[in-house]
Amino acid sequence: MCIYLSRPDITEREIEAVCAVLRSPNLSLGPKLGEFEQAFAEYVGMKRAVAVNSGTSGLFLCMLAMGIAPGDEVITTPFTFVSSATSIMMAGARPVFVDIDPVSLNIDPAKIESGITEKTKAILPVEVFGNPAGFDTVCEIARKHDLSVIEDSCEALGSTLKGKKAGTFGTMSVFGFYPNKQITTGEGGMILTNDDDLAELCVSLRNQGRGKGIGWLAHERLGYNYRISDINCALGIVQLSRIDEIKAKRRQVAEWYREMLADDDRLIVPAEPADCDMSWFVFVVRLTDGFTVEQRDRILQRMQSRNIQVSNYFPPAHLMPFIAEKYGYNAGDFPVAESASESTIALPFHNHLTKDHLATVCSTLKQLLVE
Image (cartoon, rainbow, N blue to C red; front, side):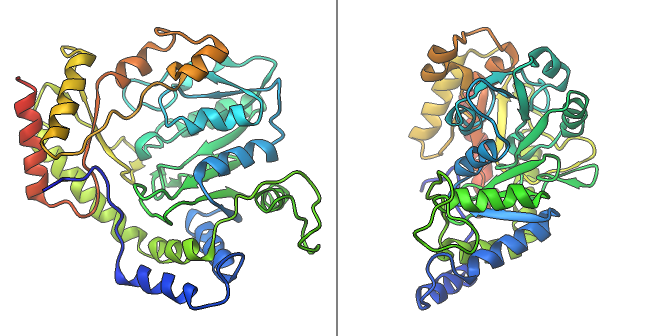
């Protein structure tokens, strides 16, 4: 038996919704697209939603819509999935990394101002693992310096900070729907904004630069094929309607893990921050300072060999070879992020896990900690 790192939560309702689209003549740019966008905007609490084919595409289109261009700089975190940085690079701008808070693992607001220059145009903070801690402070800093906030909420659907939902902090925000996320469309993403002009520009950019109300072969600007099909949207509509159920299941798994691991002083076990209602994306423990990265890697390998899927969320973005070589980043530039990256173990986390599954995961991990 394999205990999977992640699995989507798909019911007969999702299957029936997808099959209904397949029986229709509208596989793309049909009614399910608008229905999904409207439902998503209403759930998050933003005026406009623009569905695209991935969170990465969504972040890139936000860069273009906000006028981020070559010569500009965007401040972001080195502790994130690489798309947070590459979306900046795709627009021709430079990602300027700022080290992270050692507790939340989000960008450290106290260090942001040290990265601001005359070239800085925006801040791209990430709600790492679904945690929005510190985002209110990030927004205060952005307002002080007249900077835009492009919020990477790809891991945080359903999280709130002081009652304010993830995806509502930035001028624009982006969610992702890969199968390991809280909800999935197979592949997909969603841009959120309260600005109609930004939304309409993204609608055009995702559809190969077509304008509103003009012919299929008329193109107003350079655009991209970042459309999402009605098949994906139908899946997303049902998934979104189940978000409270899905969140509750994931919270239960997180609570079981915490019960089983909280008393182990060799581990730093994630907790829900004060003032947060956290929508759990993954469950990532960290080894304490007594362990080396080589020991962590051996634990990952041995758990994998025992059919327990685990991973190292996240390798530092600034040390990805193509980023380090282009911008001159080096090991030691962001010590908190690097230390966290060398100690993380992402444990199996999804709605199909039972308490017995978790007991196997935790007992195996504890056994390997002493080998």
